[in-house]
Length: 419
Ligand SMILES: *Cc1c(COP(=O)(O)O)cnc(C)c1O
Image 1 (cartoon, protein in one colour):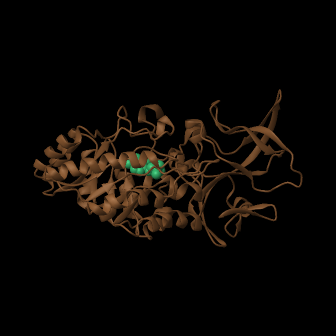
Image 2 (spheres, protein in one colour):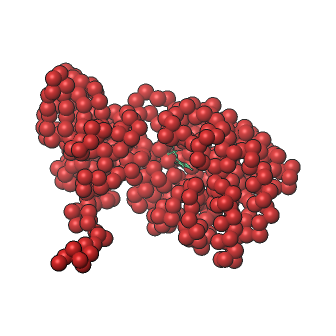
Image 3 (cartoon, protein in one colour):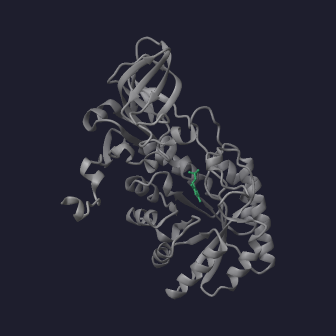
């Protein structure tokens, strides 16, 4: 394990975490290179028997160093904005391994992606298709596309991260999609390449993926009968990780279940994992500023907050919490771990069994590598925290802590207010 205790002290690979805290202060995000590579490798191994491309979902963690490490393993990127495309290119992605999703792509973003020559656009509506055709024409190019279909399966995950039900804003109803495919085929500046679906996130069962895939294979066969040939099946991301006691499927189990259908149709399988590559490769390190008792409740007030790690406040998400230094005695109490932000929703854990701790002690919020830093904000004018990557016995600062100057960069006070 990349994060484990040695002499009662939590290490990331070969580095004692308290040592990093001493040098750069708290709070900060900390990633293990070894664990990150494990995440990529389980997808690489899953795709050895069929033609496949890993398109890492940049929104899960978009630090340039993390992207670079992933792209070096021949993975591409799943992007949802021009900004993510910029990051991916900066980190050296092969544009031919980039897929572009999102319900609200702008013309400017389309133009950018067409100019760099991405693998395909995952189109989410008929109007978007028309605009894309128009933008491609202007550039005298053909826009390669897949249509994001909504297979109407229930991934049985949190409603905020469930995207494959017919009432969701994502994609086109799979039953309506043949009509849109036919229209796309007629368009002069569109090239139909694939079918895309993405049913949700933190999915811990294999059955919703298989249900969705079955519906997609049926669609692909129907399209073939209409002379619309499909090269790529993009099955999206969404495989879950263990936050507490979940037992998510392995990518290889999913591929195993659908590989014959893939081979039979001579398809290339695209997978868009985010969380399952970076989630357990990262932690959030925070320091107890104060402890406080109110009635029978104990609060550990820490220097990290909902603006740094939003998932508990946003989804009521569970993150395991470990003390960086273990105690001799093993008494645990129930405590709320809360941040300094002026919102009752600002908590990292509630009623959590933790040792009796004092101010100044450090906590590790586990499984924070995905949707951690990327969801951070400057709320309460809190500078964004640094990010650190550990490899073996070395650690590297991969993002500096923001300064107060960073907080006001780009802001202007109009002349009339200066009088
Ligand atoms: C968010 C997203 C992903 C990644 O989801 P994970 O649950 O992190 O694997 C993949 N594809 C699309 C289209 C997404 O929106």
